[in-house]
Amino acid sequence: MGLMPISVRTIEDQMAAALTNFEARPSDISRFTYLSAVHHRHRRLYYKFVRENIVRALPIVYTPTVGDVVATYGLNFQHAESLFISIYDKGHIRDLMHNWTDHDVKAICVTDGGRVLGLGDMGANAMGISMGKMILYTALGAIPPTALMPVCLDVGTDNQSLLQDPLYVGARIPRVRGPEYEELVQEFMEEAVHCYGHDVFIHFEDFATPNALKFLAKYQHDYCCFNDDIQGTGATGLAAFVNVERITGRKLEDTIFVFAGAGSAALGIAQMLVIELETRGLSPEEAVKNIYLVDVNGLITCKSENVPDQAKIFVKDMEPIKELISVVEKLKPSVILGATGVAGIFDEKVLKTMAKNHERPAVFALSNPTSSSECTAEQAYTHTEGRVLFASGSPFPPVVINGKRFTPAQANNCLTFPGIALAAISAKARYLPNSVFSVASHELANNTTQEQLDAGTLFPAMSKAHEVAFNVGVALTEYLFDNHLSNVYPKPDNVCEYVKKTLYEFDYKSSLPATWCYPEEEALPEMKPMPKLKKDNEK
Image 1 (tube, one colour):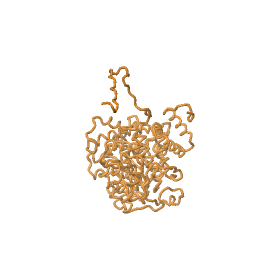
Image 2 (spheres, one colour):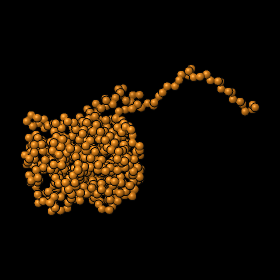
Image 3 (cartoon, helix red, strand yellow):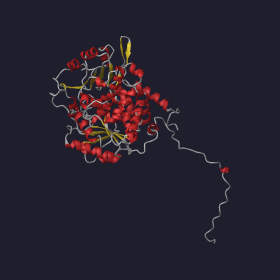
Image 4 (cartoon, one colour):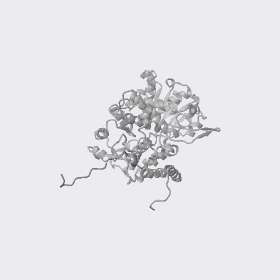
């Protein structure tokens, strides 16, 4: 018709064009912008591109570039593909949900932007995080995008730079707290299940630690909900600890752990570790005996003030120690984990002390974005003579020490939360007890090959992230059915095949209607001639 070129591009041709355009962009933020444009005009191509180029695309659509996206959200905002619920919408959330374009929502990722990565309070800009999570639900978990709804509860912000930014997209008011805020969250939960069913999966993301812990305790057993910062991070961290045990042969029961940070991430991992130790037969007192927490004021002891309720089980009856290096020298931990958002606190002294005390020390620098990491991969390998078992929250390039190449593992929640969501949706889970995340941890650990363990790698390769998500999803779906946590009855004969039937198709289907054969006319049986119609005046 002259309105398009004569050539026809297959999906493979379009993938090649997308990759060429992606690589031609001069910066990561411009690559993100290009992919966002693809997402807007050609969703299936977008998800197929991210899925099949996950090693290259993950740092763009997720950490660390998503940190830059959040920081510059107002500058780059063009159109919304998400639901903004402001404090002014209190009492009318159902009306907003009825405005959503897709009515078969099965999963919601909600944030209030209270604590985003290492950036702090980012207000309505945090929608970039909810969008990023939903992208990986589809790209890795193969959950249809029409079943997903990213949400931001805009309750203001205390970030003065945002309030003074003329391009800020959110409410220009101080962050609302107290009863009014909690009533908004309660209304959101009630209207979500009213509009989409009681088994709609609700993923809490980047709430400030006190609120994250409070809402998890309040809603965990009454809604199908999950906090990625606590439970997703906990499951990912425990999987790493299980693999450290497999490599070193040192039982977790006999390992001394130091957690630098007492926020939702550190507490989530520490609590998941306690659950694991208790399932191995330890008493609650024995389970916490070798787990030490360090916050901004030093080691948490009986003399520490303002200790969060969830951290009180880890309080130790000993003299306070202020400096992290002094804690490491005194306790001699074989595992140290950072979730502080403070760059460089695992300095040369800390790393060399870890290496002096243990043949294979384990170091986890989990803070995002990369600029907030407790140490770099190069520092970790260099100061431990290449003996460290290392994992980070953001990706680092390979490191060469004395001619030996080390590939840092990434302790990325994208290895767990897409599979958790897939299982919750497939099984129509009633609620998700902590035991579910323990199952996810062990399944993730089991997806790390022996070859990877022999090389000191603690997690599966990111190129296999979609396979890991499916395996975690199937294992958890099986667990939900077997433990009467599913609203689906009876249990399918083949859970794996049952889950496969729910997955999103990344390739084109035929746009033509289905056709089938009719018998040829001459093959039809001989028919009698139609009777003649009588005229009105005939009897």
